[in-house]
Figure 1: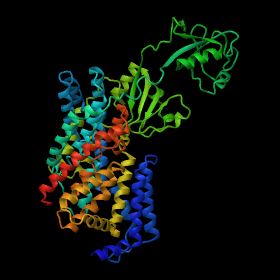
Figure 2: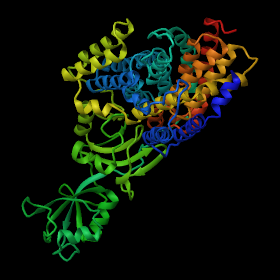
Figure 3: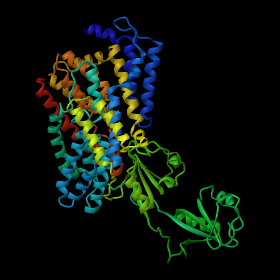
Figure 4: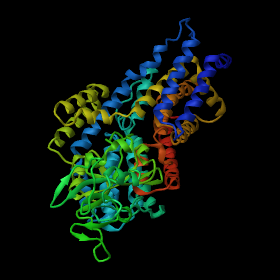
Length: 614
């Protein structure tokens, strides 16, 4: 048998696929390369390679290249996409608003007990709904609590985010990773794994892990300040009165704009008794005209000096006794969430001013802060987790918050709510219930649920398409294609044999523990979906070589691929929490590694005991 495996491993196709797998894992770990780009490269490499060099299978038939495209129609991918859309409906309608309001209120009674309840609530909800909307729901609540009670946000946000990851492990629909592992295993002949078949071990290990998040983590994390607090100057609206003999007197508007390289933004020209003149390039400015502008205080004063005018705020000339006033303007922070209207949108195309009446002041992205007047800011691409410091009227900020299209971190407790919320919640409950009782597969119930949500107006098509992530779709398709190539060429069997030989003499339970830990390390470096899809066929082969039940090894891949605790880039909600709370990379390592070890040890022990892997 080993001689046959070595012979298969020496085949050019097997070597090529295993090398491509290493390249794929390297590309998936590169933060500078979009995941969808890396995934498309892997898919193209497989298609081109097997087209130029056809692979003859053991039965004499040529491996069909169309197999690599089957991932686009894979049942797990359909279910994942449908659940993302359904989760978006819960966010848009504010269906979970009562939970958020309840948690916000009980913090006034007992902060310590309330933190525990918040962690448990986040974990339980994440077992049935993608954890991203759960984190989006709880972030403003916890930030409000922090502002009101004086508790550091660092002791609240990270424990909450990690608790939702723990809960996501508990059911087959908790994360896209769970669905993928279960469906790939079914395609390999493993008996169907039910929605709650592994709920108990996750609940037991999760309970211990939540105690660690509740009692230990808030004490070991340093007090981190929100990233954009008071870091960028406000924008003011003011008027500059053109004085006789000044630069702007008898100059065209084009001349004025040219003097400042087009940076000056003149919104209106007022002449005489309230006569408004169109801001056309050939308009000639006269002494006494007033130019309405919006900019920072320093820029406005520069314009005043260079134009030879007088700066007014309302009817008062600006001086030490009469400083600039912002009126009803307010500062707020927005977080870009996956699938939101700003996700992967260029700053220059976002049009925050015209769409939302908000002025962008600064952007905090992956630990780096950029002010809005920085050269080249228009070419910056918003990514999930980015925090935007914006300024606008109280009404404008409230409108954005009520619309639910953007996550507002202004410390308020008001959450988006519509009359469709009960219906959206009922539809989601039906989706989960139909699958839980095995009336229909989750792929069918989720698709039907999406249709009902759109048909009843709970979700608009624009919101539904925004909910779909190109990253998730392409990483799943590319990983499924790689997995198919590894299985077909014997690469998965070879890697499984190498794993078994390297762990020879160890008990099956220890081998399982090493597999889970290996997957845990991989999922903190590369995409958890990629790790899960590539790891599942290898795990099945390992179990078969050991003569052990396949189920615990499949669950080992599922659990290991969910241990996304130790790095901020391991999961998208980690990035949300990192940027909103101002955490450093080392904070996730300090908290996540012990959490990973606790969960790994308990899950390994329980799987070993339940399946008698002694």
